[in-house]
Length: 378
Image 1: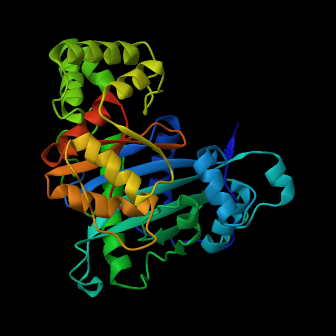
Image 2: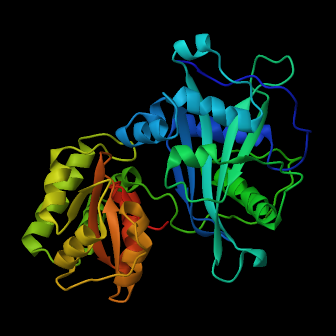
């Protein structure tokens, strides 16, 4: 089905800035043909996520349905119209909605060094840039863009979108936006470098160096072609780390071979499609499954069982579910642990506890093995 964007009025002034329609369109086109990006960029703390979203398909799960209903809407198109209003984009009419077409946007997430006005308690600020390609003037083709911005957590994704504010890249409202825009230019240049997108010569580059950190973008397909034994070792290392070594050598070898075989015989898309082999593997580990809602007592009991010692943590009254994550991991960090979750793309969490020193490597191996893992930091 053809993907289309809304018409809107007004036009961004042409600029030699890398934040321009031509660059954004090229990145969007590559994401449409491939998959989301997770890249490490020089000068940017932590990994940068470049996500390609489609309405309605990116909102077709129980969690998003609940978020849509909680926000007072009936479907994702109604949410999109509210977001369009914030961005200054013409909203969809009933006839357009009934056609069931796809509407796209990019969501780019990264952290910036916090400005001093935020206070010393926050070392980094989370930036979310929501980008819409669209048409302006009398054009029937995409020739313009609009952006929304937020520095909130997006724990509730729908509400996070609704709370975004329109961003004028030439006139930031505060120092936080100014820093975010400066780093956003680095992110766009790095995305072009990673995707082999040619940047026009009249575009002013924010940096003259290769911004991609070594090791970014390693994929299982690349490794399989080069050395199957090396790939198997990656699976073995991954299993050893997520189990904290609490697995017999025979079992480790068995699951490594099964997971590698399962991947090679399955989809090459990220994230890998989970079938019974993966769930059998998850069940073999020391994990805790919970639906989206859980209370502190459940967490303390289940985590204590996973780590083999009593864990108690402090938390404000009436704090539940994902709001407990910071308090849980603060307590676990005193034991040199961190709680993480396998992303099972369902209606709940599958938690496990990792050694804190292994977290970065687990996330790297998650990309290589394409077994998605969520780091629970909000």
